[in-house]
Length: 241
Image: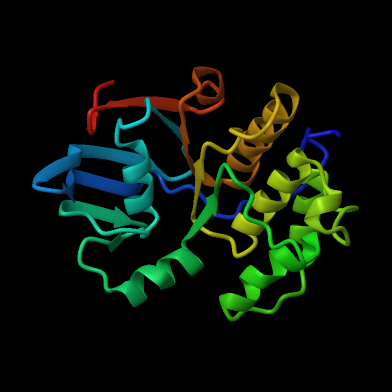
């Protein structure tokens, strides 16, 4: 598969805006109750992410990176602190408002592909359009993205007929079909061999560079993190580097 986009003329999904962070996090704290004890999963995290940046967040299990991922994606509210996504404050959003954020502003890619087994690859992507109340037909630009991902000829296949790498690429297409401003990827190569991992990471970098897609990738793998523009490290609920 040729992942070089030099011959294509894809329009950016989101034009970069200088000096305008798309994500702003200030003194973020998340506390969970474990029996009689309060456990701080996040302890005063602050960071900015520029529009169009590819940022990797590295840390071991329990470092707080997955909790940060869930808060940035509107999957869970913080205990205190502020989070602004594309100019909208998540800290005081209702469940309905966070759901709207997930539909329109943030796309998700997970370690598990989470494809519906009874649907074709195309239908797995289209269902996200349908949930957002948008036409399910793909436009020419998105079909070019499918070709870039190397799955344009695999749309009629169900997940069981696809390789792990192909399933993850379908999951990436599903995550960006609504043109989200931000793509959150949680260990996107965790279930892939080294060859398919390189393919997926290169494609994420291409989406970032050629389409202006802001990407935050959670990983424990320094080699995967190296594909990003910038890497931060987390330990014990804090950003340490």
